[in-house]
Length: 565
Image 1 (cartoon, rainbow, N blue to C red):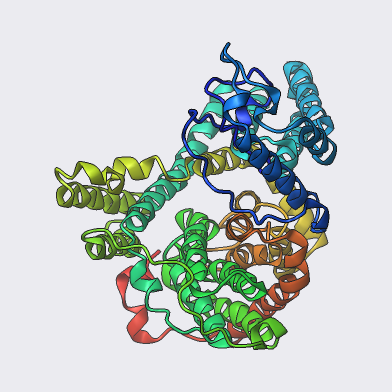
Image 2: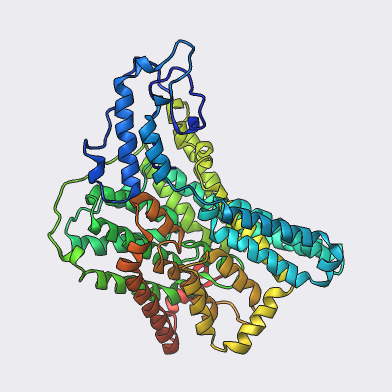
């Protein structure tokens, strides 16, 4: 569908065809924009059906432009040639492969059968675990195959969460117990959602003011090998403060200014993904999974940063070192000028950047000083930034996009709702005791906690790491593994960095796919092996440092907001 971009630019009135939604109207007499495609023969294109379809449609559009006014009838209806000629339409239909409805029908049927079973309250009450496991499996398949099924994973997650709690209310000893468990789960989940909403809004405000230019404009080198390392470590430290997705978007946008489209720029994009995932793993506010473990008390601030910093650096440095020997990096040096013009920083952008960065860094301090949950510190920072932006842009109607209300409309709300649905779903399994049974099974068959944590990281390359970590939190409580134990730190590291092994394994990778048109199999051939080497080296570095039992420097250990949880 995305390749079907021909513009129905020659109709004064909308055409009465089923393809209307693919076109935009333009009044007669307005000159069409020149096509950006080169005038080449479509028969010479051998790069696959996508470019072939684009060429066919471009040629049809040019033909339609030549006869624009003749194609509009007196009755206000449009000739079929208004969009594409008959031959082009037929060729498009033969080359275009629509998504099959079989998977969608199967998913809907499975959901309907599961719902029908759930209605039978007596069966659910007697087989609660089976019913919940089946429903969770169906819902999780819907999330994994959201692209194939064309179902948004946020909607699937919310439906799954509500359905699981309905089953839990039927199977619980009493309705009061189910309500008490739901209230407790909602309170815990809301802390994470509020924290994420506040953090995303602050980052969006800073980005709207082009505040991150203070970081990106200082990257001036064009030497391929040097640029590889600079981009990697700038992303690494940027992601320790921002979320992985925002860091990736900022850095990939920078790459478009630093290097022309090439294999080398694709590798730089892959480095951004690896660095963003590695950088987010070692700070409580850098990655959503580490944040989850921090908010719920499995991790505290300084021990996490101390224990995971070196493994995270190793997991980035190893792929960088290996990539430095590839032909794409060791080829001809690129000392080209900027590819894209740099956007100007908004007025008082430096002030907004300083306040936003300070608000993010103040959250651990606020938690240690007041004992209140981290989301309260994040909301405090958002409130301060909100007042400041209202004050500095007072009366500037042309800069409404720089204010918080507009920023709220641009944040990833559906992502927050996805977290809500997943965490509520997992909490229902925890309330039913299913996760505890799974933990007992793993303990009996996989006695090594290092292997369990490593397996979670490998699985996160295929499966979303949020539900994986949420399930792990439900399987093992603080009585099994105390705060800042080796297990929780390894889970944070593995879940954060394991997603780099596949381009679909993290939000950063998915963003790169969309922005730079990275192919799934290209990433496997060029990057996955290096990312796995870094992942394994990071685990080895953590185990080595942990076994050395390095003690904290006395001066750092006495800092209250770092030592506290």
